[in-house]
Length: 357
Image (cartoon, rainbow, N blue to C red; front, side, top):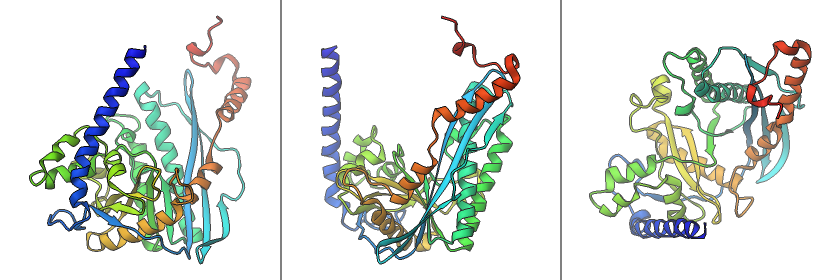
């Protein structure tokens, strides 16, 4: 065992040293102007200054638990919003919506889904609840910024196969996202989606695509995630340039399902609010013409909300929403037990959970 651990640790150290060497080369030009047409902002790394908060800011998150049974699947989803009102950088008021916590409504599915579709089903129900709540909060409270936990669009894993029974529900969720985008645009509210642990590689791909001829050393970044590269490259209070979510909307499996107007507006960047935490991925909607201004403004707001703790950089309004949305496994057990009491043997759990020994 010891020799195995030694070899693993050695391989990690070697890989990290290789990355540091490559990134040290990139850092030589990271803060200088670069002449690349496809990169809207002409620097790889840009400074961000904290802004003074003087507006209403909302944060939306949800918690969910699910249970797979013999003839049906049950999911509990609780979506909650925290709405913070700031004046002169001080929190003056905190609202919550819904105001009182209630037991989440069970969502029952009897579509006889295949094993690989069960997690997709849970995720889509969570997304629908969360996005519809965000729309309702924007209509009711008119925040200047609305933070979402996770990506601003569904992920590839959320998309069922074309012949899946879940395909109509997936398209319904896409329409919910588009309705949220329309509401935010009409109410002049900026949507800011924060991805806590990103495994994206789009930033790296852009660097390699447009700078590889000038910096051949970039070819050594094949096994890196964006967050790994930028953890070394960014200093506290810096961000990457903003970039389109996908190289081609038509070729992207999820963006291709959106109206072209919205799909073309999805952008992302990485921000480092704290020296001791990894970069935070931010996703937002923007036209190309005002991309630089919007990227800088949204980064400043996010950094102001995310610098509360030296080793954990995440918007405080999302932390609060998460604490109020969390669900415990015991809550779904209460639902299943009550149904089982009424149905008896007609309500059967999975065989693996009913072994007598």
